Image 1 (spheres, helix red, strand yellow):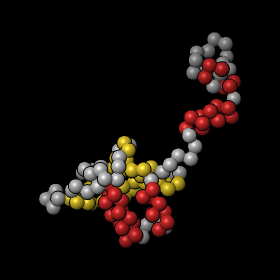
Image 2 (cartoon, one colour):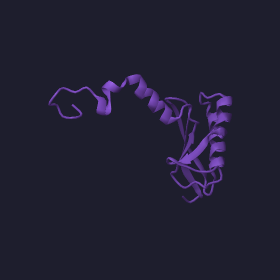
Image 3 (tube, helix red, strand yellow):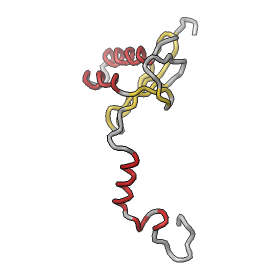
Image 4 (tube, one colour):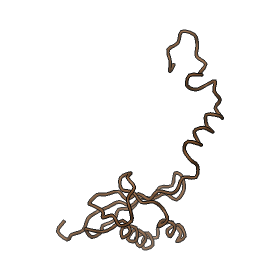
Length: 122
């Protein structure tokens, strides 16, 4: 671009299944923190239905670019997708154990009840 600006996408989710995404034009050489600041300003100007407390909590989330964790001082490139990850409420290993315990041993994996002579997975 002739004016030295690039387009990036900022994505965040403050609750399950409620994803917000905005496209921003920022100067080349901008950091992840600067992109977040510009995103907050644009949300306030366009009156997106997000309260100020939610917007201020974004700075406490872990940033990432295209699924890889980065620091707030990393420089963004053109067409990057900056994602803000909220902390996990439950450890995935513990959640899997609880699901397995709730489903029972008789229906899953090696312990599945199958008809005699049927192939696995059917």
